[in-house]
Image (cartoon, rainbow, N blue to C red; front, top):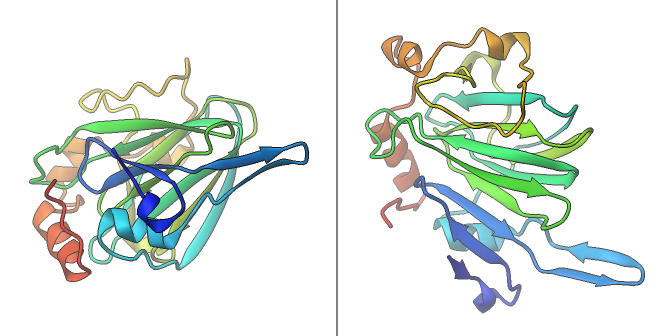
Length: 212
């Protein structure tokens, strides 16, 4: 964990267990009028990751409690880096390393995002992403480095026992698309998963080094 006080913003940045993932907790300014925070700063993200994150699309979803939206990813290159934020309610944000050949391939990490700490999460291209709504009407806003391209988008089954994600909800509710997604092993056998070597080359092309 390190602090970006050198930038004068005081955002706490934590490198997570999977290379290419970071959590950002902003300073909140509260008074009798309410609360203000800078939930996303491109300079802070660039300082943490070693490269700028281009912004091509911004998405917003509202989910009923117990809904799981996962595990989604895009072909690399170019893939799709994301910065995820929960402005209302709470979600368990989950990142899965699906990069074949990665030292942490098949592992996952999670961060609670909510309207209390107002934490955000960054994940690099080639990683699988999803979240579970822990509250009713949980809202998630996420910034994307590339626009949605349905021909290059894929899913891995959120309840794959080989991954073993604890979604922290008693009965995860999946969309039909996500319920029909292949397991991690099936996606790997079909050649659908990003390769670590391709991801590392793509990161290096834009100046990011994942060794830490």
